[in-house]
Image (tube, rainbow, N blue to C red):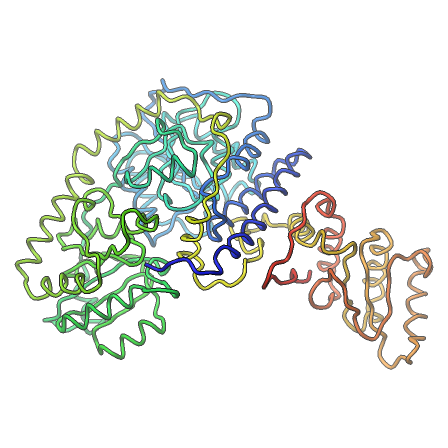
Length: 629
């Protein structure tokens, strides 16, 4: 298991400064009553903290800001007496690849009630399995983003769908502020269950969680200690798992060129769960395993080709196949004889799916149970009682024995399958589901007032950095986290965020105009008018072509343009004519181009109230100037 490196505390602190800037912006929007931008900025802040760890797993300050903005002086109550036979499942995004959407679809297929689905931020085609699960239950699927652009309106629309259900289950992404807002609009609503599929990381939604549904008991300490979820609000429901059809396995074997007599080991995982640039990764484990077992062939699904895997491909010709992300992993399970859990972070769902198919499941857990990093190497219920190797050599020996003995593989696979089915795929699961629903019905609405503040844990934050950002040397710009907003990241929000980043590093903002501005008199006049109206803007203009060393022609042209605005060189603002752009503490990178869009964006930037309202972010080592408009 990789360990945090020396630079991690500094990087964590840089991430935290950027995150705090986003939280502060959210609070400033709230103070001005701008609820839409409260939601937009909170979404960015949560997405930032997910992918760029800041030492928090929740932020009750941020959630309180959102809740106060949408609730006002009203209150929320839980109506647990609804018996319409409908459950609403809410997802931020549904994808054909990965286990998250499969989990929601399987939940719905096992529930005798009608299951409706609302997607709050879908930006790709909806996968068929989710639509089919909803329709098969008699329910509907609604995509809010395609019909309702504003986040405030999505929250109101989602609340209307909630009000038609007996129970609401949130399968949402960490950034989903729409679900948090909808659950906290004033008035009675059905009970809300938060399905904790992202149990290791930051997420937004404690204030929408009447009952937290963990998929495994091992993460309870994170919920209680770092998220501040009261223990009495936590339940455990093992994720629903079912046997996948294995049609097409022989076609995959032929396509990959796997020898008919080869024993196949399979890993299905995301790249980030198998990578450890600063320590041992899955490629190191596979190297040892293949060396010990000459008959073994390794197939990796979801894992992209890389220099590590290329090296193993050359070292073990025909025995390593990294196929990347696939829409349907079922045929790959069908060709496998052994399932190797990902490392250094366990994948979880795919190991359960392999066991249900009768595959023996092996894994490496090389951290002590007293080490916080051990949580990354914990199997889900059903496999939790089975042993895992504690060294690479022991793992390689276990795989060697399985590869050499088909009867042993069958016995081990049958035992693993029976153990998983007993927990994840039996009538008792439905009993646990009913108990979860009843528990949610009896819980009062989530209330953050009694929970204090979210604690920081830099040690755990450093572990997340090693998991998500092991190669990073500097904190990422907060604008890297705006992707979920899509078109909602507009010029106003961009200007406000850029102003917040720049504030405190100088009293003025300098832009350098591209050459040949004299060929664009209307555009240049508009720029000059903006500079006259906004004293913080300093405009650096190059001499026109073939001008003399005194800039005589440039001055004449500039004076004429100013006269057309009723201005002179005495009241035109901070305009400079110079051969070279002067150094400025705060300047936009590049040259200002002759487009109306560039001036629109510049106008929003220099007009932003965040110059005065937002706290400064002190540039740390490796931080870059914000990109130009």
